[in-house]
Length: 489
Image (tube, rainbow, N blue to C red):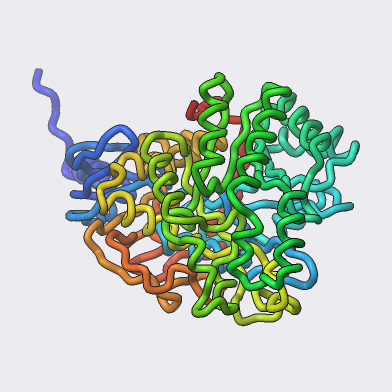
């Protein structure tokens, strides 16, 4: 007996079902992961990647990615947004402007810091940070904490509870009067992190040495922005890096040394790894694209304040050392350390007193939107690193390190469809007029780059298209995390 043929209605229904198997197909692009780069199509449904194949049919909508690279959306794991800066200083970016800028630059997840000020409840700080972010996110976010006041209440109750609630990483400072922890406090915080399986990020610069050098420079009248770098030489970063690693060894704790600027701190990290210690390392665009000479300004004038950050940009030899670390695996992640202020503003870089001494200039520069283009241009386009290494440093490794994988950081079945299309041949001259951040300048003004994001997609939805913002500031969400068991070492 022959099976009966489907009715016309049944045939049309089956065809309709096939034709709408995917909400979206990205077709014809060159898809890159940390393992390889292949020409294939991607099928997306309900905001997730559900198929990767040579050819995908049956999508409600298609994007032709012919001639473009298809990369996982960037994850910027070190960003300062709406953060208290003290003495009436106001950061230039709130959540809306910072995530808008990130999205335009190809980044789909940012990780800012909820900063505890002395005397604050850490829990209350986190709740306030959520209120600021709510309804103002173009990208997804996941909060780190900053611990500046490790009281018995914080160490015994608030910090362990927050880690269990999904805030599984926090930063500590070894410098700055209002944020630094003593050695004993560092050990106490490390001990909590060990018990709770949290990850500690360390700003490693020696506070007392910086204060001593600053005082000597001011006594000699050397107070222009250029001397910010002189007050924070590599030795203070090297010493603090070694001390942080030693404290972590006492507790048997993995740590992240953030914003490494040169060879001397790198040597300490390599030394520790050779001893079997788990030490992760991060570097940033300012250490491959800027030098200490930028802080000279036009003629040792205040223009140099545009480049003041900590640790400061160093010399060309340090740039080459950073590139070696990017190439050989010393560095695990590449973040912006976006810390934005306005230059021509009494509540920003030009705060009262800033022109009398470099020590009053707010430390930090904007870079959330230019992070990916700078590394792509200087690294991939110039043949210093592979496309796969670029993806690892800027997306996959941060996701693994901070517990966002496998949902974020890769183009894989089941992952969020956070995707950036790149034109590897597009030439752009970076200019403040092109950018979307809240600062009134970019330290990379006039820098020519090759390679630029032309479309950014968050969970399958196009949010930036050829420099135009088309996303909804309410679409981004906060991501709670579990302690990562998928670390990169």
